[in-house]
Length: 493
Image (cartoon, rainbow, N blue to C red; front, side, top):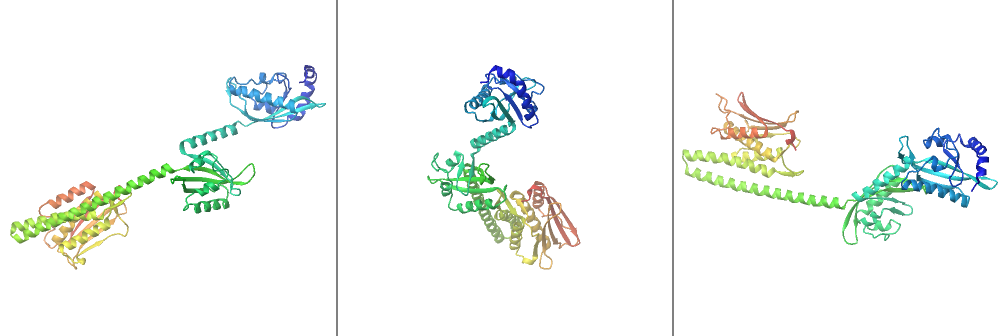
């Protein structure tokens, strides 16, 4: 150690010399004696600014007197790394590099603020003897805390979302990775070794080609292009795991070689849940289709029973039988309309929906057949686009349309020269428009009632109210026109 005589006699001249060489440098520089106190000789302005001690005269003070460490474990570590660096220089005569190392500083409010430093210690010699030590320092607090925060994020991601980080050298096959990746592939710790080959061997044979192709693609792509892999892993137990990789090519700062770096995510739980949900949806759809099929068949049975009853009444004859037979035919047409709806129901996006063009075609065909009309006696026009509605709305519309068509046949006596026309359209303001037109045989007055009993009229009004539709009937010359208008809104598929 340097003697007290050396300190008192040479400190002033040494400080003057140091000031000449280090005052103008942009980094923090501090000189101190290698004595028990680590007595401070001189520091430049950059050090005063960095340490937050501008204007303080620290010359002659011990280092930890001028810059007292905190009382916690971090403060003890700070004292130890500076003393150890000093002792190593005195023992070996060689410079020492320390850091990033924590040494907190007192704020103006009197509490410690976390700081991290990168420090270099170098011996100052005179006549071959170490008489002082130069300490230069960089404040790396922001970079250090950013790195620590990133590590915390990685640990949290790894523990909560089965995320694991990796670095892969495609030239050497060296595969540096988190231990969780080995577990994803069914390897015990250190079983797979340092290279990626064992991991490639466990990729599903149907997926491995795409994995190799993606590696080649991203190697040829500009830096920053994201590599994306989704594939299955075949475990020795026969189980499958579902893995997702996202990464990019980056230059390794150590060997300056391009590496594929990124994350593995184990999606097995998510994929299993997705498959289970998909299977449940398929089962549900199958059940709905089967139930709908049974309903349609039951309605067909009901139609057959109604026809049998109507035939019996026809055989019986008489005014009462004719009236009853007419009522049965009306019921039959309504049941047939509901059956047509169930025949047209489709399951899409987990909702039972109906294409109106398909439904109305069925209604027109069945109505023609029931009324024994030729094709040209009832004409259906519609847009080319699909118009899809929920099934409950479609049922109401089909029953309304059935009443309108039945009424048009009853009062219009349609034929090829004077057909009943059905027009389906969607207006610019997203409203559904259904128009039924027929010639009126009674030229003296407009017959605008749905039927003589009032049942059809009540049904039409009730269903219109149910689905938010408006219905109007007018007579234009010899033509009677019924128009149904309904805003599509959320009803449209």
